[in-house]
Image (cartoon, rainbow, N blue to C red; front, top):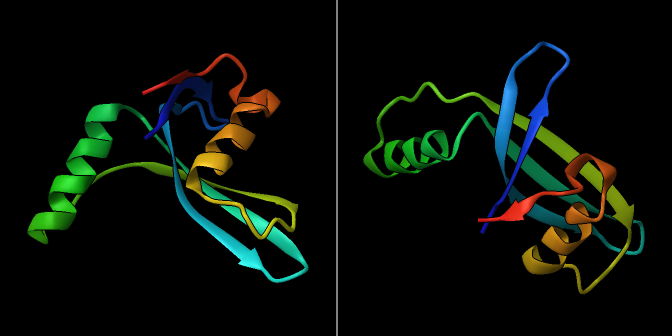
Length: 95
């Protein structure tokens, strides 16, 4: 599962493939969604292959942490639903 939306970072790098990497609940405090942004879906696929083979990789990943009010039922699917509601990801498409 991932979403596609072109975003230009402050340094000029263009990322367009985003996935939820993790969902972390700090009990009764907050929930944190970790989102990785890649320059392309191909680079995400390269990352997966290199991790499986144990090879070194050269993949740019922009990591964003989104803190939300504590939600004990937050999971990857609901995290995607939440980030798609943010201005940064408005107009994205599902992959």
